[in-house]
Image (cartoon, rainbow, N blue to C red; front, side, top):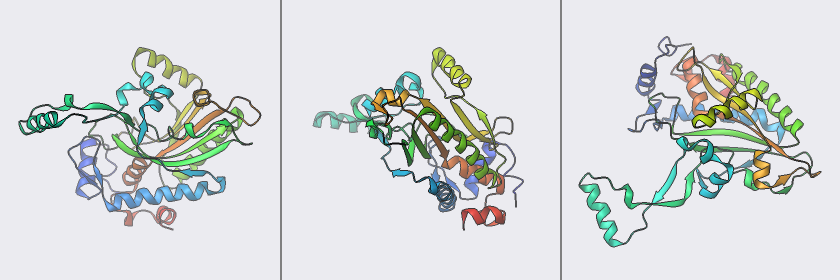
Length: 307
């Protein structure tokens, strides 16, 4: 059963309804709201469905914290391409006098962040990044397939409920020969469409580009589209005219293998690709499509999420 209110494309109204139905919890941070038990149950059930669908592939499961070494961010070139999205961790290194100054400024309502210094840690901007340094030397025959579920941070403060600063991505990372990697990505694009359509979501796919920074970034984005390196699965959540990306499929070519020095078993150049489901976005898309109470959702949808 669909909610008329749910299917009205209105950012403020959708956010207010999510709060009113107890699905999200305001925290005062743009793009940093809390999630209720019901919201989390939907999210976990979808992730479990992805696990069941992908189980025959035999992916290696890895888990990482939501932080990365600063050196890794530098190595992959993130600050060259997406400095506007980065999150850097700073901490206090001062003495007692500086600590008293810090406290005094806070109690006086003054700025105090200049008393902090940079650490060797940054917030994870892409769930797949920690995986690539684990590959080294010659890969096994047939390459490797890894899956992760990681928290991701991107500095995009917004009141729009699908544009979060902290969110979770369920990703699969494939490494191997170029033709194998591209075939895997293209097969998963169709698999993803089938999976999401089976949940009653009006999805479509399209070629896409990443939000590269600056004038040079526009050229990089155009090149990414021309080479069809990135696809997204889109569904109307906030706007019918500009649907929301809930899943992405990326072919990196030899970008990461060149950075971290791994090659195929026959010593040929290895390529990588990844696909990621935005778990919060899929959850919001399901709520938009079927209503605020999962107990009223179509039985064919519930049967897949609550088997």
